[in-house]
Image (cartoon, rainbow, N blue to C red; front, side, top):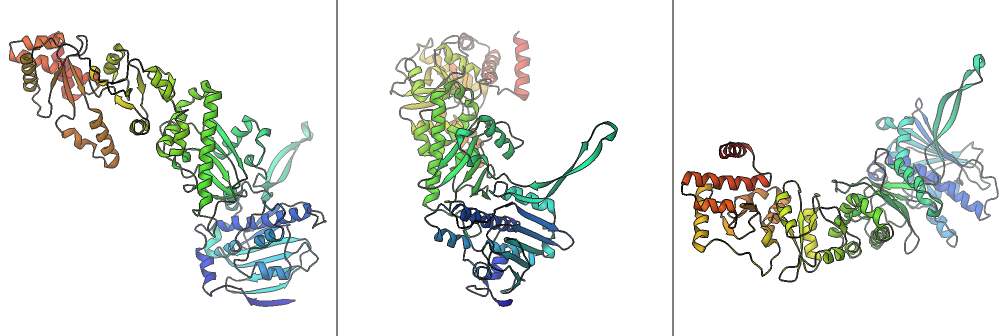
Length: 624
């Protein structure tokens, strides 16, 4: 028996397009052919479970073999195989998927383990091959056949001498693709794409030497074992009730060998209105809030699809690590790129909700543990609250504010905590915060003397979170501790009495302007307590935020530093030193005291450096 014919395609040009441009990565060919082999094997298992096949299943391991000399790669399965008619139907009619017909035929039976969706997968073989052979024998009583094609639209079918059911595909690799005629290379590819496929996949063997016998009779014996690429039942396919913490941690280590242990995880499992399983891990996040493109892996029926999940996962969830497996995420014909549709949005919403529910449960039931992990969780939660409104609605109940003493509060708890002392004349709760406790200590101590509580906002995300908090929460004002003098941080109708007359106040301003000789500075006098610094340098909250915003948008933050009033110089009219400055009649001595007071203010912020610091030290020695 022999037959020749032309492959049924819509246009004469489709085949070279399939051959050269169907897939972005040529190594995909191996995933597709092995996926087809898994598909054929699972079909046989399904038929056996339904009583449609009563033979012995036997060993169903898929074999991937390399012959360097012949420059061939062979993929062999013991699945359902094909008759000549089926070869004609499934191989020659491009874009007609055997799996699609199979599912239709058994539509009332659970066919959820069928991978195949696209009839084009087989043709990826021609990206790396001069010609391809398919030797196959149906599980039914039919002769074996051999199909051969050289990459054109013509093929040949002949008799084959194959005793066992199943299919062997032989790729005669072309010169440009000889890198693939290497067992190690194929193992690497399959380890990426097929590591969790549900049928065992063997690529060569592993050899090791063991001692056999004892004493002088001991001898080296070579042990040869099949090299199986995959885990047939990865963790996410198992019932969470049967799994331990150790199981989850070990699986995480397998996925990310160089990473620290995760904080905790979520096991996803839903079958309506879409099918999705998976495990998402919360890694230990500190300063790096860059959403990774390769930390969440997407699978379809345990076949690796991509690690670029931008369309599925909201930006903040891409800080997580793990696996998502869903046959309901629409892919393009090459299974390489996601396509947007309603299911993708539903899946995104579902994952967001499950993450929020998990965090909420941890907060309610294990608050102490939750708080100890807040350093990492906090970045994640804040990022989510800023970028996802649905997550925000849930997270406002378990998002925490931490003060500089290390105590943590929910929003409502913190509002109650500061209600007696930090509500301004407009009825707003004033959240004071520090971004650098070291350089802002002078301001912190002044605020503490007044009984104020100060939040710690020292991560890279907090400058964004501050504005977001004001925007999304009602009746809250956020003020950095050094944005104003302590008396003005919380605006009330109470004012300190000044010991200076109006004329003395004007005179003091003129003295400071002359001594500092800086047109950008506009000193002002304010009545503070006598034990506070004689001079305070502050930057108004709105100005500092403008600087930060500008810097983020294009590195132009420094432009605001040139504006008059960018920094506010406030003279403590009730300070003893300021009183001395006012009474000093020697202009040179007066200027020296002014500069010293001003330098003390800069020193308190950690901003006194270089020549100014040297001058301050020398001046201090003179005064001493």
